[in-house]
Image (cartoon, rainbow, N blue to C red; front, top):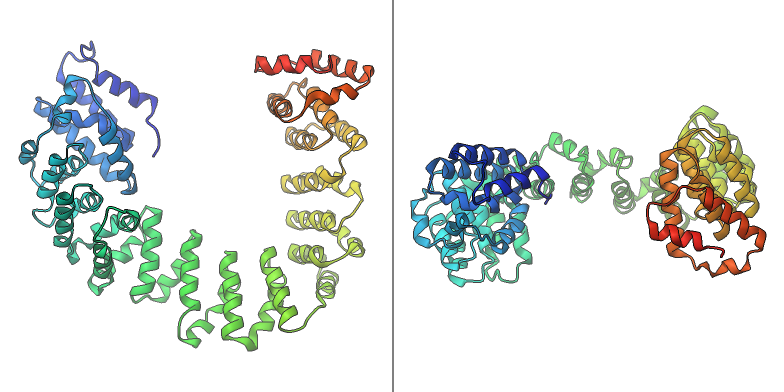
Length: 537
């Protein structure tokens, strides 16, 4: 739940001032309360509740409508925290006494048929006073009312047994087909009940799911797959695939969903289907699905259900873009089909394929199972026009334990950020005093701030004295981003290193460091600046 904005805090402070110059007329309060409606944050509701019972009818009415609007725009999962906020917050102003001292008899004025009143009654079921909660639940349970369902679900966790019983009775009265969309909207609270130790009768959860399984509720569950709440969408997709008849269009929409869990659930439904022909028509598309876990499950299903075609699919998976799939394919080809010629497979692919159509997966595969003798085969791809191929070449050469630092330095200077990052990563094991000096020359001569940032982060992995010395020199540059990052690294250095190693410095080295510290702009943290000045003395 997001915090309140500064503007909302100012409005609330104005509302709760005892003698405010802002309120010459009640109309001013009405405008401020209406303005809180745009906050779209349930955290304002506890501050508005006292005004529901304001003696001025206009203020009370606009407050109720504002609360109803905010709550309607929020997800049910936020209501759990809202209940705790309402119970824990204390109001000492005289206006809040109408809420703090609320009595069950005060609730009789609300009409359950009115959606706005039903919302206020539901919030009254969050009150600290157990008698008020019981009366609110009694009114909400009096007749079937979809808007009461989320509040009744929350009251199943109440510590007062009579309130829980009334809430349970009210929910069973609401187990009707026409109210199924309300249960779909509140499905997060239904699932959350499983974790509530105070909920003794958890049969209601099964009863709700049994209602949603009925054919009459199929439309409500299907509409839930378009719900704005992610949890609700995931539940409805999974529930619909398990309990309702789905067509090809629905299955395709689930597989193409941007949420990985929804797509994975749809894929598992297909792969676990009893009809072999149904599965066979879809394994080809599933084997190249964009989500790696689904591609891996598809390979596993092919091994079990279509063993005669498994070898072809596993060989195709040797060129998968994900390392896990490539290793999976090599394992089963080795253990089931006794194949060991993976080095030859990748080398042949790279030599026979046109240079412009080279797959980065083949380069990465060769780097995973090859030897240092494979490096000459990979080096031509360091200048490939495609960024992914260049990055794969740098990574594979590093994995094959190449000692050629020039390759990685060239990659570090690549215009692509991803290739440059990979080059920096491969240079870390080679960092020494000589290489650090060479990287500092590159740092000085480059005009790209992004490249300077990459080099500066690389200094962080160098020797202790080199890290501090070159970072202090970088702090003297004019680029604000470099100055800020340099300060972060210096503060990190002061926090992580034992500074007694300065005892091994020669007088010349100490003098050189003191001179650079004097030239450097002062750190923002004065204490860290004092620590830095004391180094070497």
